[in-house]
Length: 304
Image (cartoon, rainbow, N blue to C red; front, top):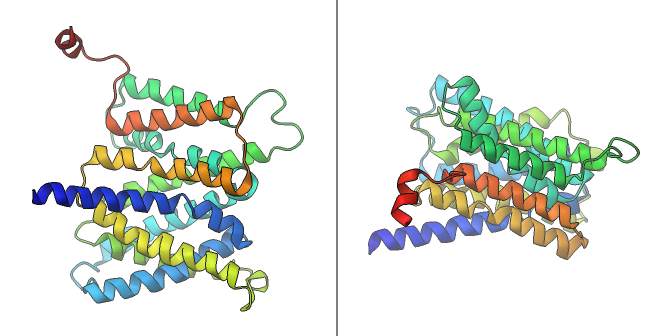
């Protein structure tokens, strides 16, 4: 009974976190700021919220803040901040829904990097899903002979989104090597590094004025809701749910982004683009959940 309740709470937390993620593109675009400015203020407000939470919980302890953990947290933070810059840049170039779907090719890069650098197995099934996702990518950006002439913003946006997916994969791989450090503390170190990294690159002359409450509202939402609050409930959900459940619920994010793009920007997807998004999301789910293209013989016999 207690286990079922714990799982239900985890599902609710994960669902809410992914629902909130779907609004990130909207907040970025409506803030009217450059990608560097947006990420900087996200890090500032996120660091304030996460820092207070870690202090309240007593996570700042000397035993976990050793040289190895801090070094790995900083390396992962560098990749994470650069990932945000590329993703937010893609939102400025082409539709949020499309780039969010492309961003969800992360599982494939995780599998590829595992095979190339960690010696992990790369099965035929995963290769087929990878091909399907790549086909979906071509459909989404409607790549043809004319795509490289005239306005290439769709291709540029897709390139930035893919770059962001690769960097997020690197963040994941490095973070997995951290031991004994609370995820909330890792996130705090990451966003704190972001403040230091981006301080020389921020254009404060174009930052919102004090009277521009709408722009500040979007930036505060990114930092306090989509970074601090979302990370807290997301990491709490990770502790309560099995990996397959987490994988399935993660696809709430692109679905919400698709709906937001339609409601706020009247973004109309062509049949080909919609098909491409479905291909990418189904392929990503298949890799996360270990789906096989052809069921094993034993399972086929059992079903007969």
